Image 1 (cartoon, rainbow, N blue to C red):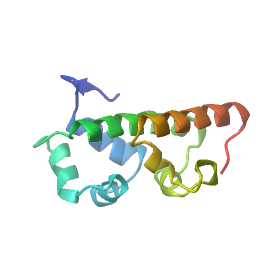
Image 2 (image 1 turned 180 degrees about the vertical axis):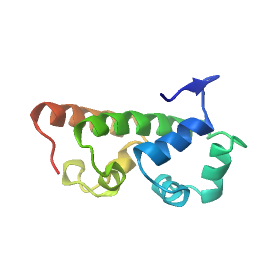
Image 3 (image 1 turned 30 degrees about the vertical axis):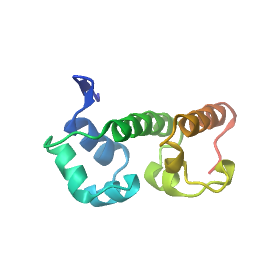
Length: 119
């Protein structure tokens, strides 16, 4: 299970999210988040920690990925990067950056779980 140490996301947490949940290389994960490859590497090696806004984005991403894993069980990273008409043509990953967008995405996932998810 993923854990937080001292209210910070550990490098192990980030690596597990990237490798096991999203099945992404460091390079693809960096592109996914809009950050540098070196930043991802430094986080995973615990040479540095994410800035607070990126840490919050990672926490939201982890929550969304966990919900989608239960429901979709397929390439979640690709789904998150694909523009969706349900979100006015925005890729879901773009919604995770704000509390409002995250809440909209969470609400939609909850509804899909109850009614059946779009592809």
